[in-house]
Length: 293
Image (cartoon, rainbow, N blue to C red; front, side, top):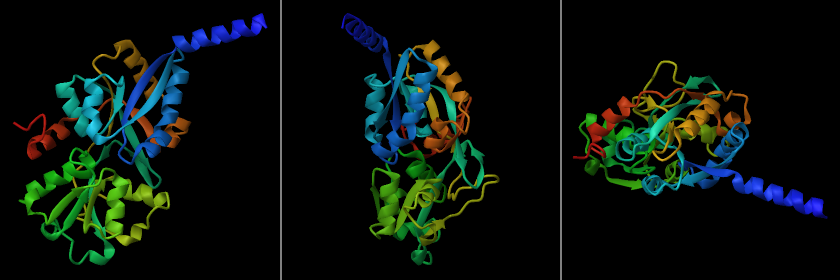
């Protein structure tokens, strides 16, 4: 009995000594999908850095800034738009960039936005100018692929947001797609690869959709309506230990496509952090923080 008690005490001491490290992840398709995709990455890091216990914290679009400000997380995986803002106002620092994958294409380190309508409406909604007469649904005002990159294209083509018949933000990419499918919106805006992934998951039939302002990018396999930008960065917060961040970066770079962490996230892996100047340029064009003054 004494032996059992001793073992239990040692286990409790060991557990208590394990520091919890929280990774905030922008829940662009909702919390459940975020946990399913990224929890294996947290498990992988916990195995590689055994004195730490990594946890995934799904974060909504409107919670990102406060979560960072209040130090509720230690690392963050978010879209490049949030990253460049947080880099300026909160001192976050990128340590790796996600490498996306596609079943029919090569690994990708860039993404963009896609504007789409139902195939049955393609004669009416087929150009950027036609959005003036459309009820448009997008993901969130702060979603880079799900709105901001498309906003830039509209501005470049002389179209003001006020010119649209209506603009409604749905909160997640999936809800935007379903809004168009159920004809609660004429046109939808999501990040590239959303339609393909939902098609591969059996959630939609890609043949029912038509892409507006289709763009062809060499070596890029996804449907696209905009120019491309660097993929999501994995970043450390200002308060996070630099040595720990270095160890996390090394562990991420060593993830192979066959690792469970990569397979569940449906990614190819990670690379050393890319240059995000093009995202800064986008924000200057649409005049949002930190370039709103």
